Image (cartoon, rainbow, N blue to C red; front, side, top):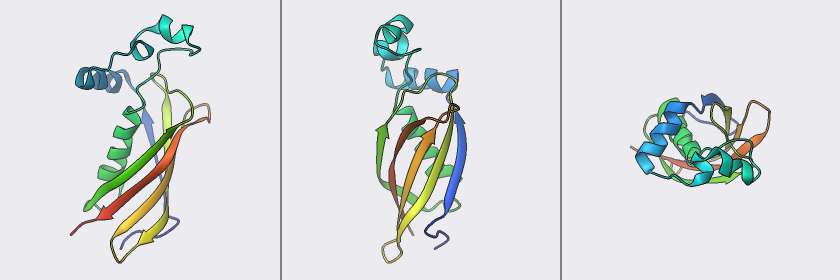
Length: 132
């Protein structure tokens, strides 16, 4: 296997207007927290809050495009949201392999997203499987 415990991965994502609009156009989630500035302010946020599931798209990109092996699939992923994400935030994705089960081709990662203010906005685990 080309992976080893302790391998670290880093990638930067920018939550651009195109990504935001693409999510809105595709999934039609127009909850006022995500589209109404005054509503978000009235509820204690400094701007409209980006959809948390956009981060799941970044995870998919990480697994599908950034890993050195392409013959993998996601078995499970967990995400815990710690802080809001706003339009044009720069998010650093940090992933670390903490377990490998070579006999069944399973690799477990811990990950976190940290914004440009050095706040952890989300963290969790991803489990992938190497396929033939």
